[in-house]
Length: 249
Image 1: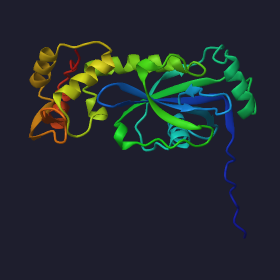
Image 2 (image 1 turned 180 degrees about the horizontal axis):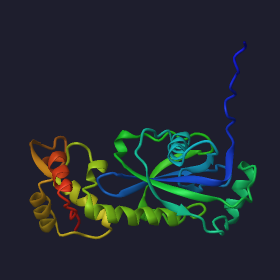
Image 3 (image 1 turned 45 degrees about the horizontal axis):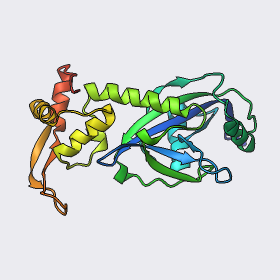
């Protein structure tokens, strides 16, 4: 008896559902976001990494696949922000023109599910491919316009980030293993988008005991070397298990 040959399901793009990814990184000075340029012919048209999903894949799978296809970044934890489905998402002529050149159904209404993540920039070197002609880290506060409603999505991700920093020490995800208190202070200011009193900041950080001092200082810097610190992951987990959630400023 011959065995029945199971055909692999054909990959079909869903013309009405997409995913978009907001990837934040910190360069010790500014909060940055990873964007792609989708067109060389019409100059720079920055957009968040995003594309349609396949009918047979889960949303989380789609987000990871699209991010890797467009930027080369993979194995990144992504968290949903929410869904964006304004009927006028495709109101700009430049967006409509681009869709006509790349989509089988350019006029289809698309609802997107947005994701965001925090990464250490030095760990990820973007490698654009597919329709992304380039991928770059750009300071969040320098972005004034993005494709479709991606600027709105970026603002929603920033708001989520400001929420998170009040209940979780998210520097774990954005700083290297060893850092200075000045770098941590700068990170909080970049995310909250406001100045923070340095003395009060250090006092609270040290009171929380979520960082500990290392027996070493910076090297190769043009100024007086500062003390290096590292995150006290064990103590942070103990605090969260007790229900403590006031890590903000």
